[in-house]
Length: 155
Image (cartoon, rainbow, N blue to C red; front, top):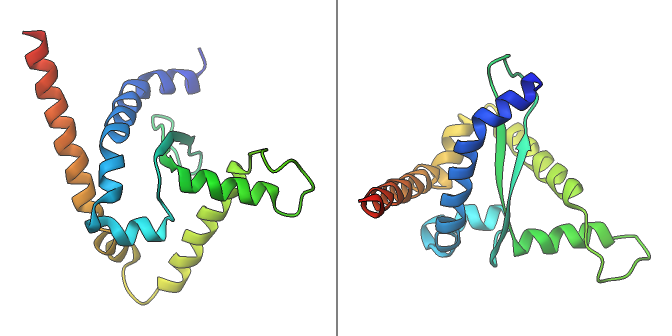
């Protein structure tokens, strides 16, 4: 196996657990008014379609394996399809455009960082305004509950 494959194999159990927790917990969290700002900013609505795992290649050391875990909802599918169909003479039932949508999301965040740079500490402001600590706690609590249930099921 290549070093990349070895790192992926080591990361797989954590990724699998993260996907399971997100699939179970995110749909209800998306509806929670606490995360309205984040939901509006990310244009998130509808059912969770899938979880995207995107390999990050910048600034990794030899022993790091960085990924972005991206929840992909119906609203995102709709946006990617509109991007794919825009300016093309194709069947309106054809879908696509995910890579372009991802690129646009990254550019949007980069632009926001530039706007905020110098006015405040961006990550702190982002975390606070989107209630990301509460969301992380919410997901961690679910993980703990799932582990406890597994222990009970084994007995």
